[in-house]
Length: 357
Length: 197
Image (cartoon, rainbow over all chains, first blue to last red; front, side, top):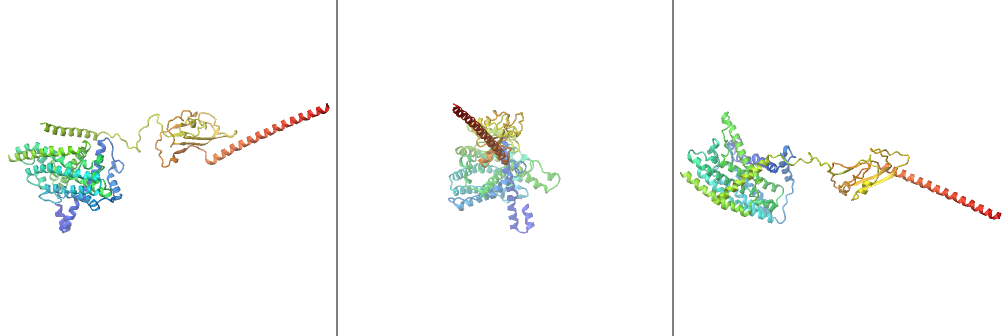
């Protein structure tokens, strides 16, 4: 584990912890956000038969860096009628909430920010903090669009947490662990050991699980999509109705923090889907490190596979964005309360019965 | 049962839509990188006018054809012994063009000025990127003469005119003189005739 190495290097638990806690931010979230914003623009452009950013760097590869530089130079506007302490605190809380999620995400066998037994529980609990930040931003902005966006966001995130939790519960019932590290280790070996293909267990159970795992995966994907406010569930920031939703009043670096948090969240939920159903950091077909007897290569490969799976689901989120129109508020609630929650609940009971068998 | 069929149908339609968008991901882009790559203009496009001053004879027909009066032409006659050159179609030029301004802020790009031109020296080009910050910058001058030359030509012409006027006046004066002489002689003859009587 990297923590042990850092502990040996610095000789102090505090320094090792501090350095390790910065790893996901500087080595992962920032580069990922830079890449994901570019990818989003490129994917959206090509899906509309456009070219997208082409000017800065090769095919616009440095466009996001240029945008960040622009945002850094922008004036930080705080209107007189804003509730200033809350207004300034909100982006920090939103970002902290989405950053904290990364603490429990297993990037590879050798790096997991905090290997706690309640990893999944922690992630779901902490991502609820984002709602507080969003509500704060909407309220403190003193702007009707912001407030509407924040209210919608709160309603949406809280509703969609229920199907998420029920699906996660289904998995926990089979595997008997909430630790993402143990969950990933359980799904080691080949891809037929992934939870989406019935998990590692032998025999008939595995095949009976498969259809219910697919249902669970679809429900989890839809509800996490709604939790990160992506299209078709983007009513909190519906640009055609609400300008930009809860971050209408923000400019400059505070806006950039919301932006960063949004992309961090996108990866976080994709990572949860990957970790729960698609074997986490496990390779679908063995490791090169094992084949060539290079043990140090395995964590790097694991990191590669985890990032690849996460990025794939981020790509699907972008793909969906350019496929589906936005849901109305009543439709949004109907999808959650009339479809996702009952189906996931029945799914939970059936999976429970199968595992009892 | 309707509940399940609806749920399955909605998921299926999402997949159908995703298939469509995925196909479009690999469709070549229909947009172009504009300032680097430009689309070919249609054959009879109408853009900025250009005047080839070598061929212009200063006949003012384009200015008269213009519906918005955006062409201003001022000409000065050349001296009789001056060689103004010939147009490419072989016509002899007789006028110095001292002002040929086209105000593109006024121009409506109707191309009506192009047809009457006897030497085909005013025509449409393919230049369409000529925006300016000041409206006055859109007033293009096509005159090839330098300001000194223009004043010189004007002076020449003025001299010529004054010379002509002087000649004319002289002639008129001479005429008047001779006429006066003739009448005076006549008078004298008459008077002598009377005396003889």
